[in-house]
Length: 313
Image 1 (cartoon, rainbow, N blue to C red):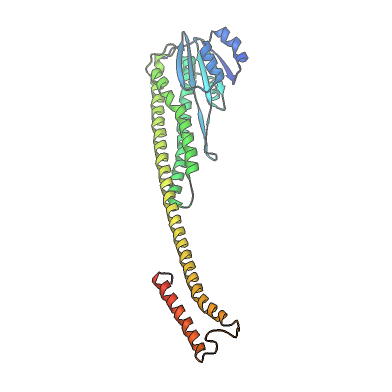
Image 2: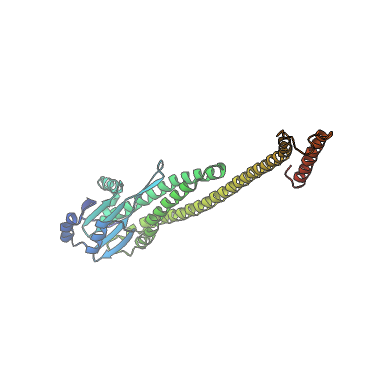
């Protein structure tokens, strides 16, 4: 059965400074190390016991589809016998929803005191994980379809960006496994054993979330490898086509050079005999014209045969 409480005080702070929390920490005897963690933020999800004060850190997430960015907030909770202090960094509606449910007449959370708030906050955080996973799954499917459907686009940057968000997601979800396992075991001081079943359900959900995160990460790695292989094949095809173009250009240049060389011979001979000197060999020979033509023909034929044999023509 749930234990009835006489009520408790809930003090909520948003991104407090050392000065903001100093008086409160002294009044409620909050552990200094935990207070420092709560103020500095950027902590991993955890659960620590300091005497009769329980300190917990949760990291809600929200996935923004159009930007493909995972926004992470941070909640620090100090649970005492008759008080609850929460510190929030970033945007999250988890605590607002818990407070709204707590204020409902005959609400089930009130019977468990601050531990009930911890349970419901953890439950909502993990629900947010599952919602983010559904949205990430849509983008992963979209990337996979594009990689295997569009050969001319490099998707590496988008895949890497999503893998980075998955890594951020892992840092929020994976460390939460151990605290929830302790809470599900019913051995944490200050937490009603009747909540163990509730925490076990949340723990099961976070385990499924972790498995899904790892599966998405492996799938993205495979997609990235496939994208790189596809681009490599595409580049090889382009290089082959470029080589073929270069080879054709070289072949055309050889042909042009060969025909230019063949045309150069009669041009040179004709130019030589067109200089109109009186004293030139064979100038007044009866068969000089035909002799020059024969020499030109012989030179051209010889060059043609040589170029043809060497593959230039």
